[in-house]
Length: 266
Image (cartoon, rainbow, N blue to C red; front, side):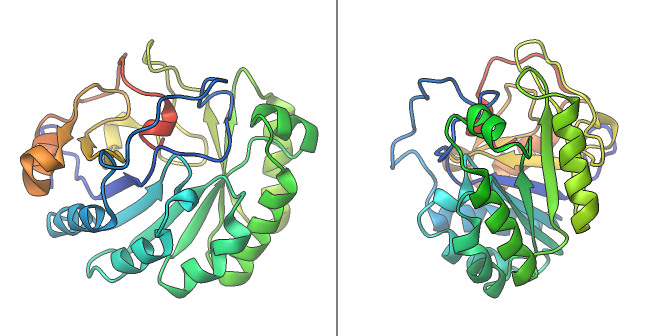
């Protein structure tokens, strides 16, 4: 698939849930947010059908996100379903790592290729504060389990902004270098102002070369993280929604009114 600006669209990020077991300060307000109802969330079968349609149109890379994807009931079954789709060459999942120790071996066994782990500091107290209660030891245990299970290469996502600092990012980079993990530094984004930057060590934020579509947990295909445009797969059908999203994918991101990060999977 090519959009109006000649970019080849080959990457689908799939938010499987709007729920999360952390309350990171840059992602969610302290009081939480109104969650979608069970009927509003796509079923595993609906997600599978959308991924199949996307692969038929040229998508070769799929990443599962949330919320926190490991809190989604049936996540291992979904991974197995998607891993069986012929044509996917890169199949990953982004997690906060809290439940990863329990799931790593099972995910690897059913066909997941690799893992990204979001970790913004190595300091246990700062981590607890930044995530409003998270236990960093569970994240470390999850990373160890993922490495043992062969979910490689492990990539670490580190957000730098109001609630973190350069020392936090430096410590995550040093940890990654010591363990042989890739580290991606992400400057905090602001949807309302349209403020974002290219991810250091990654490809996010590089509008000129963007190859992504996003499927939200309530079934909206979004052509851009920083855009209010979306196309419902339940209303239009997966194929039509994908086509419309590609057709109207903006040249670059800008200010938008929708969402907290938990709703679209970053």
